[in-house]
Image 1 (cartoon, rainbow, N blue to C red):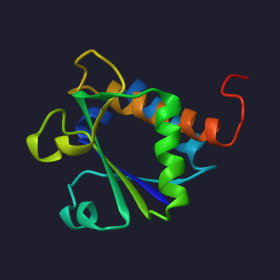
Image 2 (image 1 turned 90 degrees about the horizontal axis):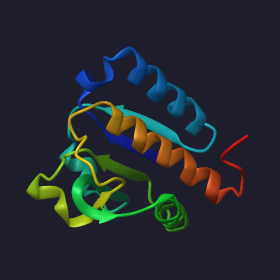
Image 3 (image 1 turned 120 degrees about the vertical axis):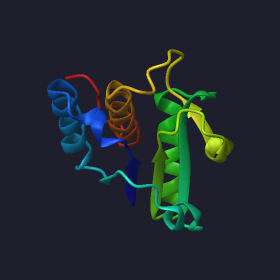
Image 4 (image 1 turned 90 degrees about the vertical axis):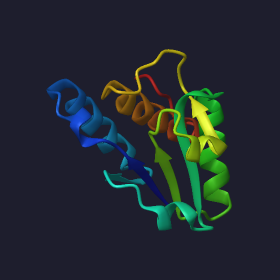
Length: 133
């Protein structure tokens, strides 16, 4: 399974954001292939083997356990892709909106780091591994 992150790469130019993002990408590589895409691929989003998640400030709040349940569900049901769209309330993607936080940081690279950390934490939960050393 792949996790495709549709990001605006200009937010990954900050040195500290890029380092943290790359660190979580490396940690996640033990569990899943992460692809960073900067162009929204409509055909990929409409595939029946893709599970789409919109990250927005108005979506349903989920925690790490709920995200791990989504990842596990996708794995067990043989989804090829989990597509994570950082649209921050664009109407066309509100159908499966989730929210990891209740503050508006949509237009910062910190949002991407937070989501990567949650993906990593989700896989640690699924594999019954400790998150903290």
